[in-house]
Length: 490
Image 1: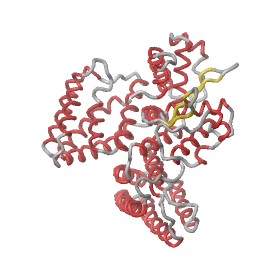
Image 2: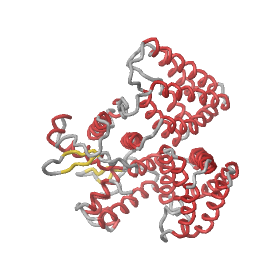
Image 3: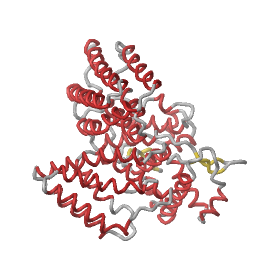
Image 4: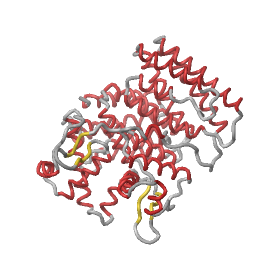
């Protein structure tokens, strides 16, 4: 699926040929950064150096640099001592776009909690196994903060503990995914009716008791109990949201991301403005085609320079949140969001975080084995679409275009789609993109067409077990298949 930037090339910008070459050039630059160990602060070369080294025109290079900047891999600095400078990426813009996309495609509370039940207990178990004195202090401070805010009406939920456990797990993939899940859950947790002070306090006290049980298990290095306590807590969260959530058709309250997470010293003003426009779009109920205002209107509303606004709009266009239409009747138009840009950015961010083969295996196994079980149940319920779509995906492994690197991924993406959970589909896309970029950046090309027959055979055996209604065998075969991919992560 093309991003807004790709479409800009095709819509009379620099042309589809330039756009395709620019995307390929951006991938080469990003692979170089990965291969060099992500040397933050170092220059990859001046514009002239890069043009000569990469063998491309100024127009192609400048579009490629725009993509690299959007992915937050590097930023072009002009003047003496300048060049394309490697930067430490920030997942904030992509996280905001992911939350908006997941809301748009109709992610339900059930979807969110299903994903959380798959991933968060694993994080709690890992955190228990590696807890340190600093980690203990961090968790106890979080519990103390919860008690402090029991009577504060401006604090609606006590979610910070969850991403904190993700961080303490030591697994960057779990940490990132749990962060997205808790942010989106918090948005769904807001109620359309005003809760009484007593109801609010009672809910917070109950949540705090469950959090304390989880923390006690983690501190005691009891991973099994930590997983059990957290699973029970997530069931309570589900019940509370189902009881109190906003009615269908009403907008979800709250910001896409808390302002303090955007407006730090490292944040660019354009990123702050893009985040505010994100929230304004959400507040209006995301009506596709709505005009938010002309450039002049937006300049006055947000009180920034034309240069800052235009950079913010480029971020929105890149993540397919909105696009600027010129001429009479134009302005910033709300568009249909899609996740490709966020997938790319998140994969690169995780690469920078130093994801290991074991990190990836843990999360991918949890997602894909959960998906296989759900799809097997769906087929057993009489859904004929399962066998039809997966059979086509199996055949595509060998019958698809030669040299197409994503052919083998279709079977996995179709499984995720058939499970009916957009969160798991998006997370799986990020994992597969991360795997592909890591292999490219470390000169370890994936087997591709050379192993197509073998991959097709494995996929067919997984499908056979699904069709026979044997979820255990299907999960076993999927796990063995995923384990076979790990040697390429070096």
